[in-house]
Length: 228
View: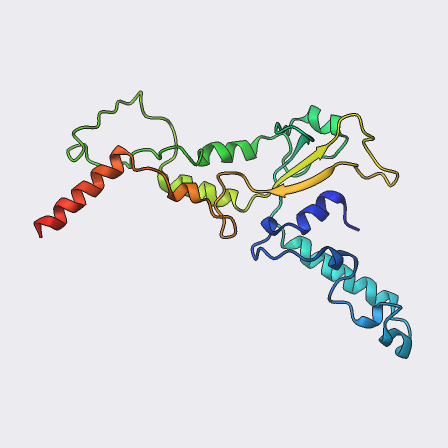
């Protein structure tokens, strides 16, 4: 019932709002099944085997409940084991003999990452800053980079916290598929390095050094407090 990519998504805490993933054993034996559903249980011995129709219905309800609560990935990336380079292009997907997911090859994940910006990058100057209070800062229109302001960048980072990154890694030269037709590689789920999530805190976001703009605002606030 569970393909390898869906199984990886179901067992990851990054793919659901609660951050609580089911145990691997629950995929084989859902916790909603009564003990009687196990043929070796005491209940099955005393009351007879559990109805197969009821078992199928319970399994299906549990399956539907789990996958409907998942955050879907936008694409799957391919990586050769032993390397750090990944690719989501069509030729890489075909070379690994796997299927694409979501909006594969549309580049939407890269677009969201670019709008979020790197963690270590200093945010652009807030528009509300009056250059009267920053006489030592000189910026021209050519120096300003076309990036969203600080508020929008944080919203994009929070959006990345709800977009799981699905990566398929495999060993080049090995058999591509197993006897049952499934890929022999491994699916892994992670979040983008710039993602903001209540389960994965980005310490570097809060430990950046003060830039000239922030320092000027602190100095102005200190002068205002000293005057009172």
